[in-house]
Length: 333
Length: 299
Image (cartoon, rainbow over the protein chains, first blue to last red):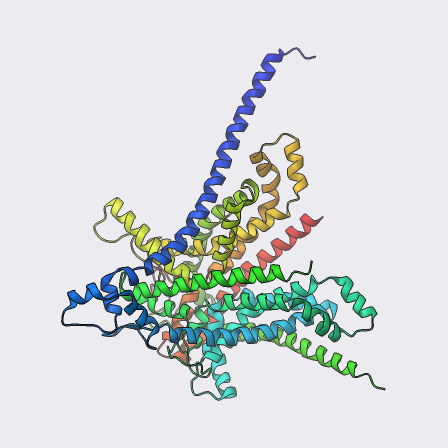
């Protein structure tokens, strides 16, 4: 036993205990505030984009401006009667996107068609190329090259999209036009092809993960039965993983439909309502990027662009949710 | 009898390998075009000089300065916050419905198109926050309610925050649970476990998050299109309340709005080269740090 009295020891221990408890409470409190801030930021982003687009429905002036049956004789009277349906009619009942004119026309159809065209090209090309590349990495490439190919593919992911857009505009557009013989130098196909370069690294990594996480025992067993690699792929791996492949394609879609810079630079930005891949196209994101700079705050056009942003958020959310569900549903555990 | 399967096997092999080769070739092709065409116009003067009025002569110093300032301010804002949020979510919060909601919200935010952050930055930071600041301080004319470097940095911060949180969370998940339990058994409080056991091991994860968000921030143009970037400000002072020039935006504007694209092309390729070098350096540092970290943790 030491000489110091027991009580003093205990009180000093209590002292330090108190200090530690205080520190703990302060630190956990700060961390909790951080968590709250995260919630705040998330809520702020979601709700802001939504509320800024709300005047399209709630503000009579905007409803009035949106109405296709604009009555210039008695403006006041009309402002009170223009209904939400006339706003909707402008968005869905005609097919022109002309935001700056006497009667502003905000049809969503040309933008939808443009987004669909460009992302379709990007996702189809991206899926085919990354599917085959992932198969090569997982099965066919010599072992030494596999890692190198993976790393090089991922280099594409680190490439700023504005660089891809720039190269598409200045360099690839001319050659693409010579090969495909389209009338327009910048078209949906070019934009989609450049866009597929941003999708390829993501999807290749996903596919590669899917194949390399497939139970090795089954592959070994199949090999023991004398199956060739292609038979393993077509009869075992593809049937077992097609759901995940679909989910990966969905994620690629989610990544590419909101891409702005490439589309802004390579697509020609013509808001036309058709499914001609050789013609120009304009997506939701590119419309925001192109028009937000000149818009007047609080205008109908301003609210409309926020509505486009809100559509982008909702679509991202739905796609993410669906692909998560799909990935979980098709796990082979 | 000949085995037809050998033919199929060969076909599969050729097609898949050719596709992999195509992807590799595209990457090398893009890099080599930018390097070869950009190298001609590249000089020390090009990097350090200010651009002239027609943008075809002089250098790109203001854009480099603007990009670096933007990225620095963004990281100062986003990295500590992202780390705190990730530590809260992973170490403190219970794994209940609330945690699930925050996590899925953050994952959704990470996938939201970057242009939407531009909208948010313009509506929230420039108009609401800036307007409120002006009103509170009592400025007659707009000081904070202007497109400027400060709000661009905030917007970029919001954009990179989810990525940051996710990469720190991944680093925290690599710390073995046994070590946390051992710490608890020795009488550590929760905070002391975080401070002495979890955090030191997660530092390189935080660094990776930092570096990756820097390389993303240097490469993204869409979110700052209407939050503060400008076409031509040759004497950029570096003040947070000024508009600024940025490498990516410069490429975009020059490529789409330049009156004579053929004359502008060499300048553009050289600028692209500088931008690629910047982003790839940061990316490479991030990958190396992550690799070293993984090796250290798996031992």
